[in-house]
Length: 330
Image (cartoon, rainbow, N blue to C red; front, side, top):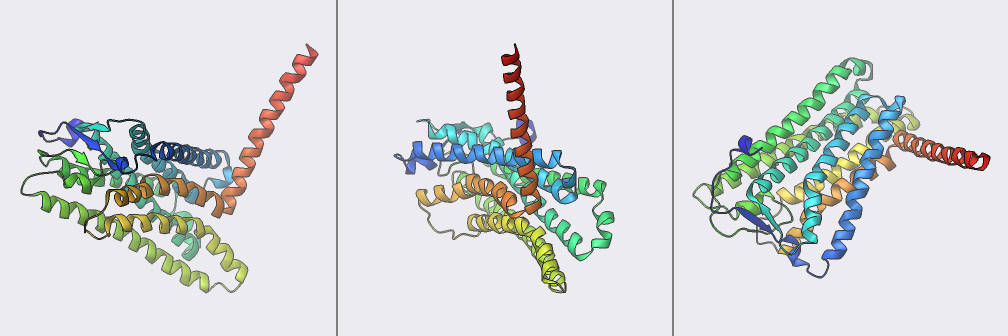
């Protein structure tokens, strides 16, 4: 990872993440809250993966993309949240220079992968509703695998595009990062040199352009989807068609809503408390909400989850009854 990033030698060997210092008396409460949310995020996404893997009826492109999305969320939170939890219990919140660069790379990689996968899922719904007769051809297993692979490859490229320019800048002054994680904009404020403003502008424009491009493609997909749904004669048919999009559309609104707040917010002076709470929205809250939305808004997945949980409970109870019977018989 170090060789790949080609990190620049600077006088700063570590950074201090001071985001939570704005809430000195609430850190234990934040630790417990974020730990529960993190565990729920992991369990929710693992339950989605297990359910889709075990249910043959869910072996379709839509749920293949959902599996890829759940994996990206698990990896995204794993790259950020454990470190955040450790900082909440530590008095000295230092992170090594290389570790900071790695955290930024992986968080941007999985974050952009998430955006690309949401865009692919929008395209999948567009094909399913607007071109149902061509769905099996356009969304073949090989084609779906390529879309997922391109999403992951694109996320990795974007992670490098954002991380490399920042960590090639010299850091020769203060090392206190006013954020929860090694986020791009707070780190750029600590860099020195004549081209810091150029790198900051380039990184911001790249992030905004990619996010807006993905958002625009999703909007175009849903414009065609809504136009097609409105032409369906029966109310039941319209309801059934829209229900297949409801969970994805809700996650898109949450994901891009929080992302727009981060990248399109005013560049005026921000309080440490405001930046910290804003950082929590996309590091903890968005991944926490995603499996809940997909589980509750997708009827087919919700029914399959119930069957999976019930079958496991029945299997465990039958095993306990079998062991109890053997003990009594013995």
